[in-house]
Image (tube, rainbow, N blue to C red; front, side, top):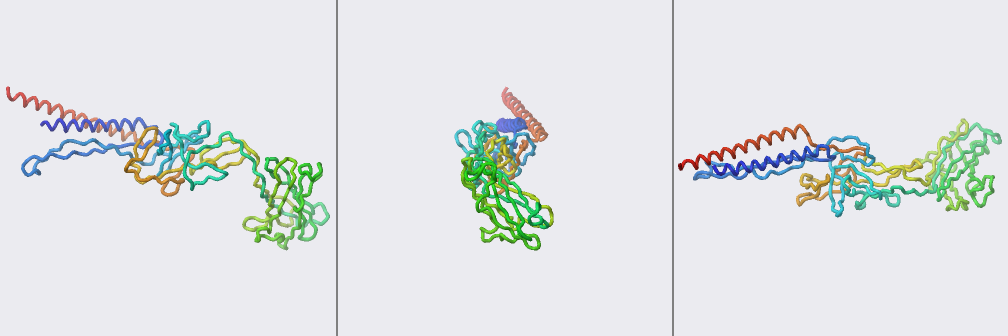
Length: 425
């Protein structure tokens, strides 16, 4: 009889814990990346009555329940935040708190502070890799991600250029159609633009001469108002009877098919330009052709870049952080890291959407998205909570009924005790 009190009281405590867990789940219904918990009940060892110890057994109630966090996939919803991210599949974002303790999270509502540090919504520093000397090395150790907010991107001098041109095979030597020129803009080390002119002149059947010039005012050896022919940037082109370029011949050796354009003494004060004009594509197809069509340029390119102001930073799929500059260039400046943990149920919550390892947690494996069992990072999205409001309300009703039933056990046991006491009267 007196055992009924402790049995019922253990159940009251267990059901009360269950109600607390349901309440916490419902409170985090709208928390990004939150994983709901369930309560696992277990009974206590039974007491044995009788000589044999097996004929009658009476349980001693329920033990303290255990909570189990369920790491199921939450719904992915698009968001308007430029730095928002969601994980589709396994893995966790890696963050560090103010004490430099490594924590893990599924919440990807990130933001930038005034210094360009990538932070969680509660101020933890997001871990990954940042651009150093133009390279994001994901093979190095992870660290804080700091982005170049408000910085001016320095110019890049042109070192390579291409011109895709068809020269008119029907052109007549010495006639206007036997000459053709096309401009191409290049950039020096100070970010100053220079317009080079590539001129072609037909000298014989299937043969054209070429030369490259720059405005005379832009080099110390030139004369203002007069084009300056760049020394060494001239020569002859030969085509076969199929209109394909045959000389200069394609590589190898590496010097074939390349016209080296050296421009010293720039009046802008920039370093001397050294540009390789590639006459062939990487797969050795000629960029210059000769067919019976009017001479025309179809494409040109150069690898220089003007100085530019950072316009915006955004997070793309795969955890790549891209910077867009005022010159239209987009550059990879960072990469968010993901950690794969074999037994995520062993993680312990520490608040602020963060989890930390326990003594039972396997060693986290940190790497990039979509490798080593890690899921995919989706930019411009957030993972919703896995709380199912209908299931939680059902659990709440069951726990409430269990509490009421065990409360009735306490009342009944008390009444029986009073009846026993009254037997002596």
